[in-house]
Image 1 (cartoon, rainbow over the protein chains, first blue to last red):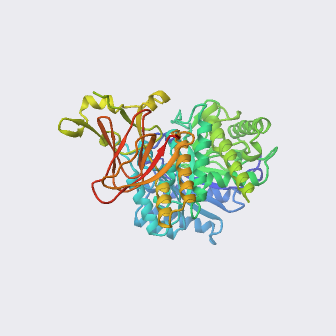
Image 2 (image 1 turned 180 degrees about the vertical axis):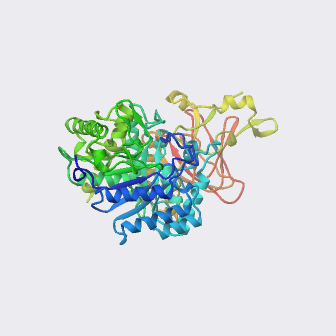
Image 3 (image 1 turned 90 degrees about the vertical axis):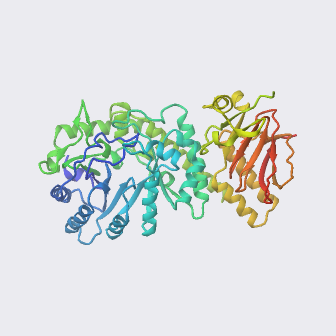
Length: 379
Length: 180
């Protein structure tokens, strides 16, 4: 396999620190109490590696993520922007995006976010009885008040934002309350993550045979509310599912971002890098060893692509995708799904259905198709 | 003495401070908050999800803000029967989603209940407070306060009255009745 056979890069995930100032109950980060930070030198080498790799053949998104990116100093991101400008002087290749827990946002951050045109996502789980039961400080205190202050600060600086809400088993009973919460706080762009089984979060409140039907009911009711709002709320799960339903069908040999080698590159704060599913960086398995495939100071893309570790990993992931193609009627829409969920739930990439599939892919597609058909029938 | 019904927050609802802060009990001096040993009997910690248990309890619930806003928007624009029917249908759909479905054929009534007023208690399935001021329901030995947007689903075979407001501002009530 050569560099031309992989990529192009669609998403570069840089984890400037594993540290998070919160201690959410469902967090997948094994090392979130560790305060290591990426040095500016390491950041420079990371960009140099990426742009020299041959993977940059189209515009891509740079996502600052995991742990909490805003525990880094403001100057880190100014420096990053200056480094990016060396490689992308016209500013047409890279879109910066940042996912934050929102608790540290203040006027200075807003000024930087606006100046650097960083797309911002805030993690918030809805009203206090939902949010504060899971998203807490290490002392066990709720965090919603601080998150809402951060969102208010973004609004005050006219910075558009989207939110990611993690749905737990309890949250599925509260679509109306979530809708009220978003409307009350000026949130118009929403993504739902399911509480996944990942890393240290070895079980999920969404496990159980009854959950898919509960999830469908939740999503259906929420979409009815969101789509009838004026203006309608954007719901990622509806847009992605409707897009998949109306778009090109995936077939033999097709791979999606999460299971296509080097469409995603993940770089940790010490310079380790991986591909595929970002949550695998920092994890290891008996069969494959560490999922970090190399280090940006020592390992070229060519050397990684010829390594037994990468080839074994890719073979197993490709096998799992092919199994999905042969066995699952949703394959044409999802392309085999994220391999990380297969690994964490089934213990191997060479497997098919997961809880994540049943909820985030299958249930979302079913509900989106139902809404599309009903809207078509009413025209 | 008549046994007091038990009071619980309906499953799949979250009401701040409920039900402890909402219940008063009758004694010789009038109405007072529950003491500790009354609490465990009248306000169970957990509601068993099986219908026989639920049917014996006064279940507190709350309408979402968007439904209350839709109601007041309808009132501001001039109420028409069709609008009210659509609103009642929205309330029924919401309660159905929450697994607290009104009985088949239930009748929805909008009532303004002023000082000295009286709500016919027979056939009441639920009382919902659409106004901003608290509404007080009176049951055998108990009084239960419904804050803005909150409702109470009555236990089977228990008659409840709505205590008329003391101020001139009428209570704005959505009553849900079992079909005759």
